[in-house]
Length: 176
Image (cartoon, rainbow, N blue to C red; front, top):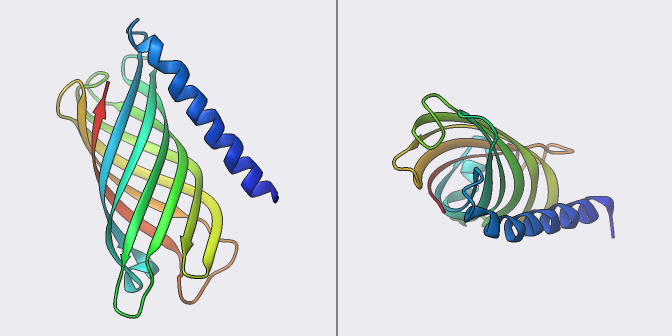
C-alpha cells in the first residue's frame, strides 16, 4: 500500500473517532457541534468542459475556541455528472476549515479557509491530491447555515483531458 493511501486511511479513521467521541460532549454544550451538509456542486476551470453540475454531502465536527473562531473537521463527497463524451468525476475529501465569524459564533456572516486531502476518481483517473478552499457563509439560525465555497485540488502533473480540478459548492449545513 502506498503512503498516500495509508495517510488517507489514517485521516479518515481519526475523523471517525472524533465524530464518535464528540457526540456525548454535545450534551454538555462544550462548544463542539456535529453537523451534516448537503451541496450543489458546479465545476469550474478546466473540468467544466468534461463534467456537469453535481451534488455533494458531508459530515463535520466544529470546535469553537473563541467567540468568533472555530475549527471544523470535514469529511465530504462530491459527484459531478457526465457531459456528452465525458465521464463523471467523484471527489472524496477530508479537510480542516478555519472559520471566522464577523458577529459571534453561529450568528451572521462568516468566512473560511480550508486545507485537506482529496481522492478523485473518474474513468481511468484515480489519484489523491492536496486540496484548498475558501468561502463565505451565513448562519441562518443557531443550527442552520448556507455557504459558498471555491475548491481546488493540486496535481502532480497537468493532464490535458482533466486539467486542474476546481469547483464551486453551494451548501446548506445543519449543526446539532
